Image 1 (cartoon, rainbow, N blue to C red):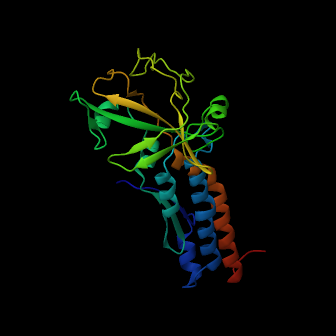
Image 2 (image 1 turned 180 degrees about the vertical axis):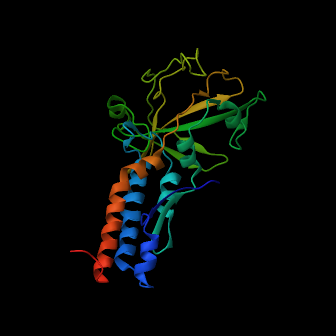
Image 3 (image 1 turned 90 degrees about the horizontal axis):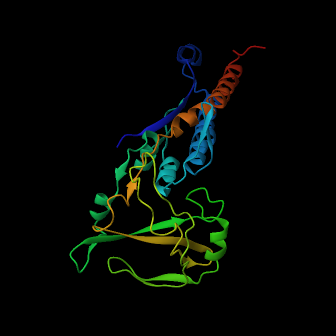
Length: 272
């Protein structure tokens, strides 16, 4: 898997260091590199990957849906190849897909090829796909409207009774007929001409327990489903990594140069 990374390092001063340090360690510069790597580069990348609005080259974008894997990968992706270089990286496939964008595609074949797919009495494959919905203001997943949340929070809990592969449920309350968010695909959408059979939140249930609540809907896909029903439009690239570099570059360089100047002063080589 390709790795995406960002480095913080002392800019264009290798020769100066070689002449001045004479084997000395430059402790202030090293501390500045470490701080810039973790407090600026890594912290900013995590913020962007968690759904904060990103400013980049005069425009703005936001990553609407994330996976915990992507953020955890950035949190774990920290190393210092030497005293004067820090690196933050991610090996998350989700992060790579965000950076490169995704082509339009039919999701039906891959979903029906999943090991979770089952075969019905009619010999046709089917799969039940869960969709999780955030509460109003959520940044890490699509947030439901306030009017829907007002209904959802008052639902009785649904619970899982047995684990996979024979998972069963005890169903509680459910949002019934509701056309909120119902879509008809038009224009360049690969599913143009298809209209959803129900609203986005129809059938929504509340699962978990107080303090650890999840709101989900479940949609059934089968071999008999319309060819256009699970077509996903193209997703444009979102250059999070370049945005991190652009938006932290000056601060990173200032921190490191200040550390270097402190080392020069400690060696008696700084200016007035």
